[in-house]
Image (cartoon, rainbow over the protein chains, first blue to last red):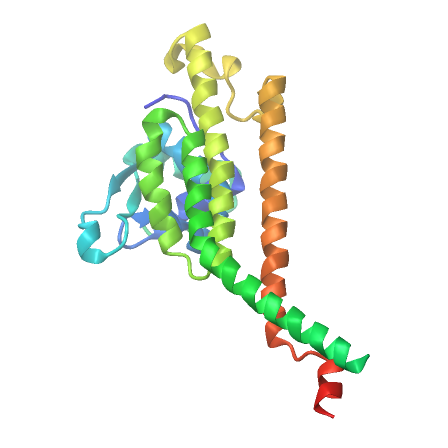
Length: 104
Length: 161
């Protein structure tokens, strides 16, 4: 994983916020797309960049595709580094914000 | 004249219905082909992972048009991911690993398209334009199919009289 920080844009913050807010701790690409309203062409490059920067990690869903009769989902989670960096980014971009955008 | 018009409208309704059914039958195949193309654009080490992941994503989308739109989005995603990987590899080859590269050598905040060599920019714009054209064509075909449900004015009424 590279040491470069990813580009912080509005859609990137939306993705991070959604992943930090989710109660299950991990979301699939389709769930993130539904929650954020981002198109697949925007979402996956963001996930790729965040994962490459070690802000996110992803794992395959632990199900057997033949049993559930659908392909496995790749589940994304925010790492400790990602959470710290995202909080810093939120503070830098929205210094006047008093309420946290997510429940940790 | 009225009979000819009625026959023509009847034929066009049947043709629209048949073409709508045809398009509906071909859409899953088309979606699979678009996803396969998007996966092919990716670097080799990423193909297996994204192939399965994107098919899983498509599976969660209700409706054929939505699936086509998401699949076209994967083409863009494939290109951007591929360019991102390639750019990083090139930068690493020139200035060393990211730890030594620093933000001045490679700033992720800069425009991706502005950093591309000319041929890549051209192939990217070709892909974008062909994707948009495919989408417009599909939209026209689907609107044609949806027209079946709209009552046909004029000539059919003449036939009833």
